[in-house]
Image (cartoon, rainbow, N blue to C red):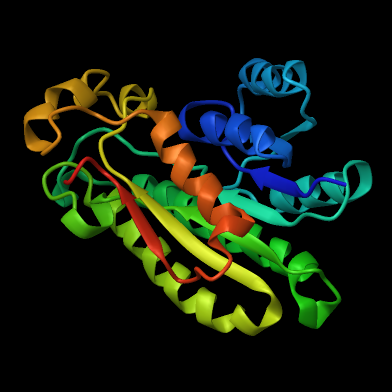
Length: 248
């Protein structure tokens, strides 16, 4: 039986590309979404039309109860998971710290950090060999913003991804002897609609001069790195980071 992976935020962009590629590589995929059911079902249909298996599950990762429900649904209707891709995340409109509200910062960290922590906790409860699991692989989607800092644009987003980097390093050591690998991918400027959700729909194109390769990346290019880290071809990699950023 093919292994199961949950991809959070899989209804669009990098998450959708990862879900489709993972299915092509032999994974059974849980396509998670927060709001856009139609888009998530479209991703699942693409997988199924190509001969793969997919399950669509709604859960907003900013809410612990919804994360718990998602894992229970997967347990009941799909089976034990072997992989988790923590991809769900948000940006916000460009702002300096002096312009940021408590509500904005809290939302950023609830989705980008708290959601990753809780989804990972639930995955480990099922994967860890110390708890009777069969091991597994976790890939966190961070960002080159964690290195750059996001000053003058969104330091809250950059800081949330910095937290994910530290989480990846620490957790990889914590569970290395429990059959679970933990790695991360740091995308740079990728041409997806996340920029529009932050109020800058042309951002990927506008920032092209800052990219050494002189072009934004594509979601499929990031997915390649994620799925490699997820699978057996990277069996000796844990606590590792792959920057997919065109040299930025």
